[in-house]
Image 1 (cartoon, helix red, strand yellow):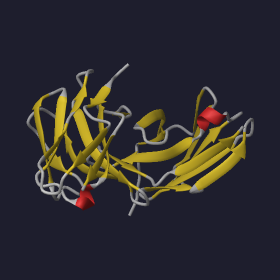
Image 2 (image 1 turned 60 degrees about the horizontal axis):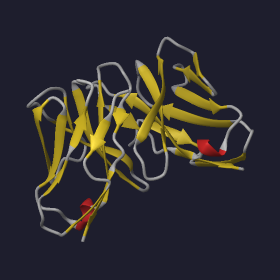
Image 3 (image 1 turned 90 degrees about the vertical axis):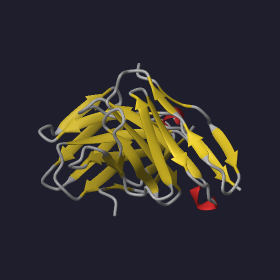
Image 4 (image 1 turned 30 degrees about the vertical axis):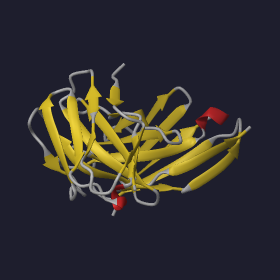
Length: 110
Length: 111
């Protein structure tokens, strides 16, 4: 089964609204990463948050990590049509390669 | 910026053919990975490599092999393509402790 699971599976919002996606994972981690994938393309690394961090910002992105609940959230503020994409969380295994969740499909309506 | 280049965006091959998917990165990364992505199944790791001439099986290596003769190039080989290998193939590379950089993907159709 997947290490990370995103929630919701799909999200549709109006341009200008905020979008929040959640990720739950099962085992202890030393970091958690979020990626974006535009339709038919490769994934793009957005942000990495380490296990000793609780919150991290990058532009319009805000990521939180709660290691006690084994969960993370990605907030995109003031969303734009160009934010339409799938968003994945990913966690490293002991052998260093990443395991990806199943993704949240975000649609931002103009 | 780090660039990961996959040789083909779209590929159509016949059942039984030997297929080579090439991936090249330009930032001297030690680690390279091959995933396949299918609807409903997410990204699944096929093979990865931590160094030249080194390879490790991922979660679904059956029907695939890899080659890493040079640090910058990691090739995925389908020994005898089958229709169930129709998929999006994604190559990635990274330096230790960093995030992955992905290629644009190769959409392979086996007919």
